[in-house]
Length: 153
Image (tube, rainbow, N blue to C red; front, top):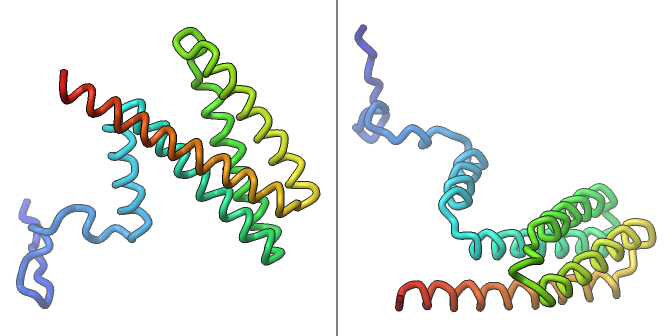
């Protein structure tokens, strides 16, 4: 069976174009993100979750400032899901006291997010963004140290 080769105005054929070249941009981004997640180390996965947590907390903060209820609800729901994921993946055997402290902090943040969803307290929201940003930065540093140790071994 012959497949017709279509040419576009730049002279190369569609047959030689990568399969994702005609995917909508969000689909390409989603495919890239999926590949990043599948190939990421456990340390990098934690950093990615924290990056998304900070993004969603910032979205919720901005939505609160703009009185955009739909965006606030969506961003808070996503942030709660990310915190729940972080909580569920803690290793209490290997993490010991630090894992217990992180669990307490994640539970505190979850409680505050539920409360913020009801009363829209910008001061508390800013505090949660700051906590999540500091945790993200700490995990970025830990991931970099782990990578450096693996390379030197």
